[in-house]
Image (cartoon, rainbow, N blue to C red):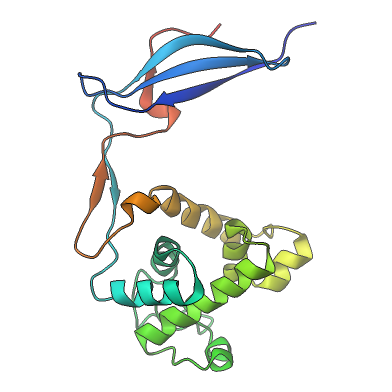
Length: 209
């Protein structure tokens, strides 16, 4: 019987003198045995990854709201960008208001003014924290609940099969993947890196057998 195998790219920390990152392509058999197949080198001219800073005017609001509800500022930043791209005057077709796109009824229930950016951001942070608590701290389910409602997530036992919601979750997680705790965006700065961890950015020097 043929052996089932799959290959992974293990990235080695550090940059070679030539300016390329090194990795190894490892094949894992169905018996758990790992075999190094070849070495891979990153394209020396990768597309830089840019992490946009939190807009200076809103950075203190994001950080204060994040501290208030014990969430990462990066998570709230991703949400604010996804919802309105920090437009305090944004109004959706459904009537959602401001930066975090709070529905009027939600704003009233939270006793926040959705037209006040700081209160709007805090309201969105509270809604997200409530969703995090409801779904065991799972960010993907909390984001789905923010978009489609906690009821929809509970009904389907996971991310609802709505194209909009699934795209919403994916796009937010993609933003978060670009930011680590050690390089959180700060007002007035852009964080750039020439190291792209995706396998597509690597050139294999041999073919895994």
